[in-house]
Length: 220
Image 1: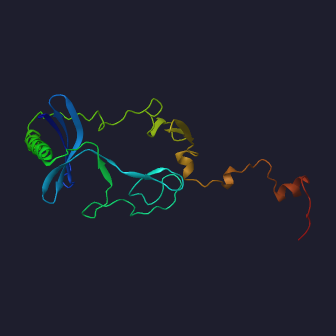
Image 2: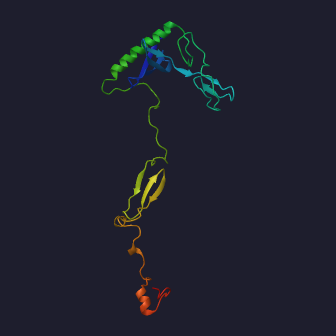
Image 3: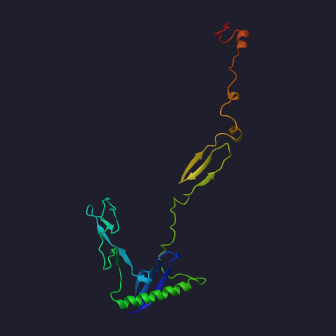
């Protein structure tokens, strides 16, 4: 058995322990994906593809990750230290999906993967570099649905100051009335000049014509 191809996907954050993802091909016939290159205390190493270990809630029987403190379904509190421990006393939270069963195979894989990783870092600095690792578009941004394309706020119609303004938000149109014009805003809402004057009757008219309400006339 020989490793016929290694593809590397470099990570961009230098502060993270995860340096890259990679896939390896055996004998131009069998591919294993999602191996990880991780920076450890003694240098970089290759981690095999794995899955999270889970157990069932004793109350509702829903599966939960071994690190979960509460059940995702019923909310009952779970023992945080229920995971099995390895020989070093660390909790076993993950299980390898594919892994070598002897040290010779593990060393072969790690040697070839780390060699390809360093070559990929050099290639990434060249102009026109293209990563060959196929991530099936998982890093792309999804397209909006047909009814979400105008989700952002956008003014639809801008009228004069004295007229209303329409604003579109979440596919609904809201009308905002400006109320008064620019000249009216400087005036109080109600003034004496705004009141009708046709029905005003003075005391002089009452005395002269004898018309209108004479209540209280003659009282000093």
